Image 1: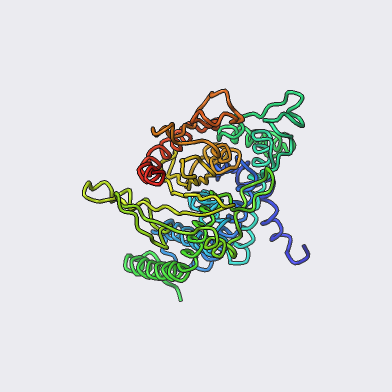
Image 2 (image 1 turned 90 degrees about the vertical axis):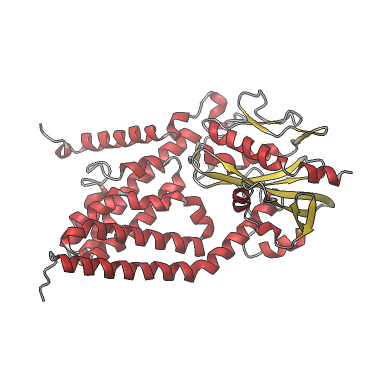
Length: 215
Length: 249
């Protein structure tokens, strides 16, 4: 990445690991629990959030000097809502099948705390290019966790990936099911997503001791 | 130029300008894209109706595959021979019956003076007449709807279900083939009595080989959505019973 200075590179790469919005800042948990029962919605949600957060950060950053501080949260909300509605309408017009697949998930982007968090914490105080990198970086960090959780939940809960039966057929008992393996129905329920996220946080912290707070 | 962004007047002016800009932007988007969206929705209805009639691109045990959007209008006019609207005892032909919004009809029908308009699409596949009717009901979180294709005796030839916001992996599975395919062959009528079809738990028939039990196997973890499907079929298909009985006379 010769294009980016060291500082800019940090903006993109930090949220992927040591400053991850989900596992370190524990933001955006609600949508991470709701939509990760399967891999495909997780991926499309990640892409949509990259778009909304990237553009939203730029818009807020461009307006940062003229936004009245009293109503800045409302202004941020309106920017997110507008972008999300535009994404939704464009998907409906040009990629109708995909938009049906996602239905409520697109609307859920509005409630994602990471977006408001980045607007408030970064875009209001930084220029458009750096805000863009920060937005994309954080959305990527969010997306990576979503995809990891979605992968394990779909694999262990339904025995499929992208809907393909990778572990065999549970009804006709082929593949792994032939030797007595069963799907864990608990994996498709939201509480299990919390446990998977917890395991990721555990692994991450035991690999990098610097992340453990001292009391 | 430094602006005092803390002044009340500035805040109000900013808010007004923002509302106008955002409002017109979204209105522009919505009305600009509306024709495309309506077209997509009509094409989707045609795809769903044809899907219920088994006119689709399914392969083996794979996913639900519709006729491609660009071909659907042609296929629809090829397979759907006639469309009728049933109002009480009166049956009138209407080439756009499939566009009737049955949600609005259900709301209007709460007024006892209103005769509900019931659309029925009559198609022909492999020399067999197939009657497709729309259904709509409630799942766990939101609306569920679909199309049921039957022959003259109200034996199911195929179904298509869809939903607005059922739980992914649980209730949302009603639109998967392993659920929908189970309905084919079941009948709504026991002689002349309307039985409906139950989405049943623990019916000891998970592969659904028994086609005379008015039951299909339920989805684990989706009890309320499944009950919603049973209720939707019982309520909406029942209204068509007089029509089918008049056909068989």
